[in-house]
Image (cartoon, rainbow, N blue to C red; front, side, top):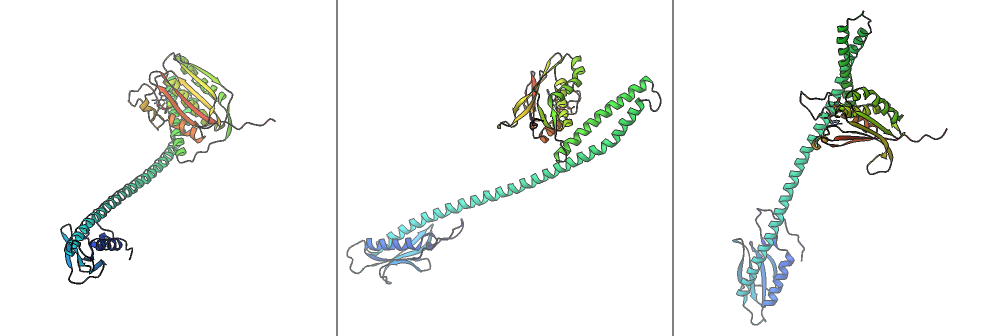
Length: 385
Ligand SMILES: Nc1ncnc2c1ncn2[C@@H]1O[C@H](COP(=O)(O)OP(=O)(O)OP(=O)(O)O)[C@@H](O)[C@H]1O
Ligand SMILES: [Mg+2]
């Protein structure tokens, strides 16, 4: 008896007995029927081929057709077995077995169709998924390409803009120093304005250049020992006149921490944060700056330097918090906005901090104030002597 595997049946495939029932199933059925009814039986397919039989058959036997779904799939032949008395007779036995076969075929076909439907559905959704994946991959590649193009465009543009700007600044300074002859007070004032605006523009361009270079990973970060307390004092001092004018008091509490990194860049980070704190503070309020030890990573225990700059200013709405580190994002985008700036300060601060392997984040309550925290890795302790 062969263990012929059943053929796969597609949703629209025609069926026959052999494709729905295995040879051994048919043989067992024939044998059981033969024994139970005292007959010899055989099962034929639609072409008259004998698929299974039990006992001696001859052409005097009774026949009953096997139907499934309105189609004739074969026949059952039954012959009285010589010495078996009684029983329902070959005609009835053939009819009975044909009906049982019809039932079995019905169930087998239903099972096969369920299986085929399931497979077709799986294949369909898998193909769908592959199609979506391919489209997503293409989109991601395109975005990365655009991002690279944008960064390199910004880097080139800001570099090209700096050259002529340095000349504007240089010549303005020469005029102010009287190298081209003495200036009238009005002339001095105008040249002073030109110099101030050119300086501002240069700072902005430098910031854009730095951000785009950091994005392309082309910025060298110096590795020096930097005393944070010293830096913060000098930054606070540079904002003192501005703060004083508006009655804003700045207090500094600092542990004497030394971090490793790029002095100029770390100063720029602190400068940008203090600049914001002063700018967005209310008149007659307080800015509290603290430098203390804390973890480098939220889930680790490597010690690092935390600088906290807390103002009691206008604060930032929750839904804006996620965006303030994006280039050129400002909460107030209107042309009549009350605060100056270009929206690049925090972008640069974040890029610099991350280039140092540090972190930056903000907690804020609208109307009450904001707390910006930056974390820098500590310098390794220097041995005695
Ligand atoms: N301390 C703060 N309090 C309230 N809002 C703040 C504070 N710091 C930043 N913001 C909000 O985040 C925005 C982005 O800050 P960012 O420093 O990048 O730009 P800017 O200060 O507007 O301009 P720039 O720094 O380039 O001169 C600000 O415009 C402001 O809306
Ligand atoms: Mg700023």
